[in-house]
Length: 143
Image (tube, rainbow, N blue to C red; front, side):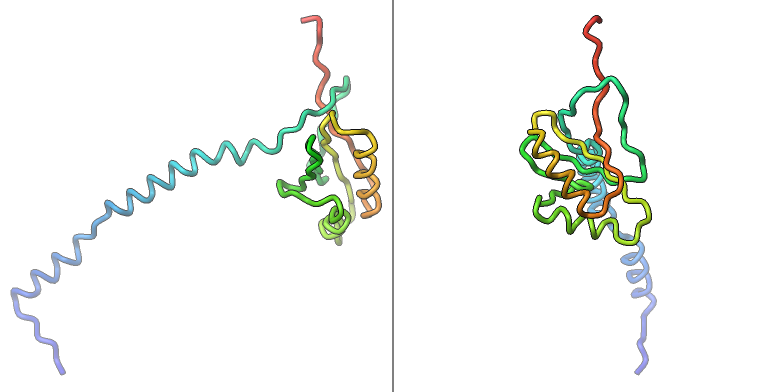
């Protein structure tokens, strides 16, 4: 069975294939661009915590895991909320097969001392060898 195309049909076939409407594509791309521009600063901001002040600088090293504990006692590991009772299991999973087990705790200054010690104890039970406490630099009052 052969397909016969008459001379007039070739002209119509060629014009319909060459005219692709890109307007909807451009509209979708502009909407996505606006969405990413609005959400990008929120993703980079991180979890805000009112850290206690200290005269010495204590910024976490790049190779350790940072635990963030907010004033409402929510614990964050890499941006996700972890239940206190599952913390030891999550830390074991994170440090499985790693030689250096280093953790840094960013705890809100309004948290009770006993609660922070309890989180440090759970972290030690998970096999973390070094635990650091993150503070913010002390502000001079003489300015």
